[in-house]
Amino acid sequence: MLAAGAARLVLLATSPRVAPGQLTAQAWDTLRGARLVLAGSPDDPQATALAEAGIAVGTVTAADAAELAGRLGREAGQGQGDVVWLTGPAGTAELLAALAELPGGGPAAEVLVGSRDLPGAHLLDLVQTMDRLRTDCPWDAKQTHESLAPHLIEESYEALDALEDRDQAALREELGDVLLQVAFHARVAAERTDGTGYTIDDVADGIVAKLVRRHPHVFAQVEVSGADEVKANWDTIKAAERAARTGQPVSALDGVPFGQPALALASPPP
Image 1 (cartoon, rainbow, N blue to C red):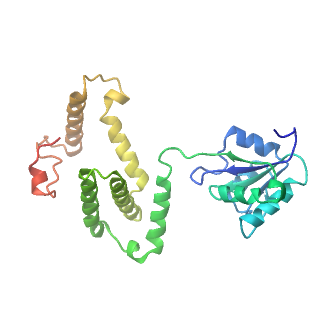
Image 2: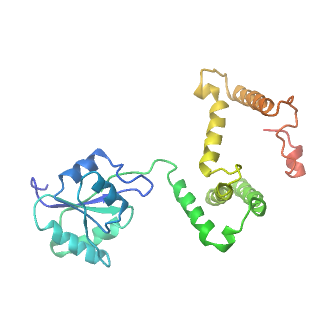
């Protein structure tokens, strides 16, 4: 147990997928009460957000974890009170190991998680990666909806093969390939300026709105007796949406993708 006011090195770990400055109450309390707050660069987004909130952030640069540990150890040993290092999303384990190698085991150090990802946050990484590929990779940059179409079909069939083989690791990988196709098509569409473009957020908004409309037993006051009635309601709502959109009577062939293989085309709907 540290004595009141004793020197402590706090490694503030944050997610790059959470906006800088969106921190836990504990993190803000620690930052406001710290004797010194340090970052690896004055341009660190978290440092910028803290500065805007009135918290001064100093800069410490180092060539590697060992040098950084030494410099932070010296800073922590120069007085009482917390020294906070904005460690960001990576490097915490390596830095802790380097601190433990300092004479006497280094300063008392702990990791404080200042922000955590929500479920689905890693999809932001895919969007950023796709943006980078579209601008920096010659092959990715020249693709169109039409050139990507065979990959959309191929990746879907490979996912089905993995599912039928009951290979869960392969299925996870193949689902990633299918997800890439969605992100790729949305990225291509986002570049259009003729009024037909859309973004990955538009794609997500569209499917969320559809799911809410077609699940009134979840998002409204409709009661159902079971899964069969859920399916029947879905089909009824879908037909009404199609009729409203086209102004034409509903046909049994509406929505049937005729580009699918003959065997799948002939199969009854699930």
